[in-house]
Image 1 (tube, rainbow, N blue to C red):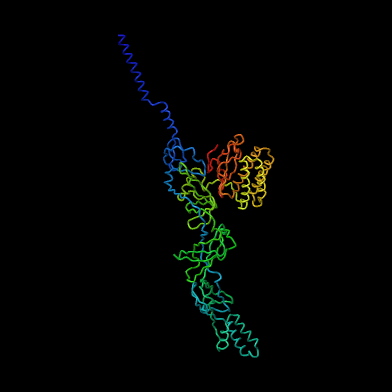
Image 2 (cartoon, rainbow, N blue to C red):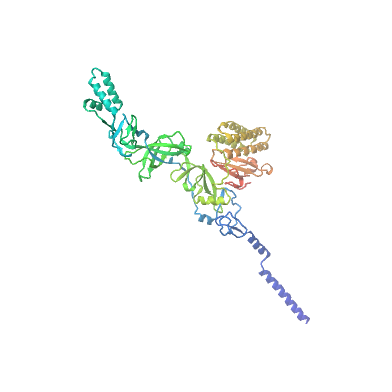
Length: 588
């Protein structure tokens, strides 16, 4: 019995051990369960049209109402720049967004203007009454009637002219005795514009002429008729307005920003909607010296030959002027569809390269005059960059809804409007600063102090009269800070003290770059987090590669690029280091 019980107990224990082992194999581990739970908890839901929407649970998009979908996790390199807007691939496809790379070119030196055909004011004349009388017959029945020089226009009965004829006949009969009276009678008729032949006929005819003809004095078109049969006219009354349309004026409207590119003598070609397939040629003959305060335009006048009579006054024309100021100006041509306008400021969207998600950066650019469907970008865009050419409004609208910057809600520009001459002088100051920086990179304190003297010389050459208002105040404040840093550098006893003053000088130079800009294609704002006991310090560099002026050879490559300043590109007030466009990894 004990043996049986002992055997049963052995079987029971064995069964329990085997069952526990099998349960351990089949049951998921705690690690797997926790991992699964954590995965479910960390899943993020987003909108296919608005990937900026992020929620921890499924639902509907608060912007468009679409059902949310699981979002793939983003990499740590995703941009937080409010100037950059990210979209999903589905959103890009739905918005029909297309991009293209831009290439550098040259402005074709052409300007598109619109205007009207106008009569040549030099060919407009008035036919007036030379003597008083009454209109007996009228041979001009409507305006627009073509007439030729010497053609009969009207017949006038003039009592005064009848009396003048009698006086002439009487004076002619006694001209041998009273030659002065005879001469005066003839002169009276000449003043009424009668010809010598008409005067001789009056003398030789026995009957007095009661009706006199009004003749056309030039060939043209009657543009205005001021009399009717039976009207009494006085000397000098305007009977008809006649215009010769063998040549006409082409009056164009040019905006003030285009005036620098237009000169007298510029060739132009123009077309008229009413004459398809015909291209006319002319030259700029006159530029109005007065600007229209309402339209902010100036009248440009050209004279066109119209021997065929095809051009009629008040026809609309589209003209293309070969300008004198843009022919050799380098530019980046972009299609009209890539450009957004908001007053004087123009915006394009540039595709961010190597981004995990499709991302587009809003960029302000300076454009020249439109040529056909193309605008030349003079500043703010460089060859090789990829811009949005279709769907730009969809991106901008989505960015605005998401709270990002857009065309209608942009940050204020920190960069002030200053003259190019002022920027050139600041660029010379920056070049001297770069020499000083490079002396510190080489651990040369005496060389740095000597370079500081060159910075002072360049600073003194900057003409403060080139800036006014807020820009002048900003410059004067920065100039004072630079002078103090340079003075401290000359008084420094060792290279560490020189570097400390260089830090303050660099802060001012960075502020100059952001406030006024430089005439250099690119300069870089660089940062070393370990400078001055891990306090960190910035400097301005002409090279993208890191050469640390705060450590020199001891940690030459320590630092990172925090901002890239491009020529002609404005710096925004609230654009932080984290939102910079060109980031580099921290080097040691």
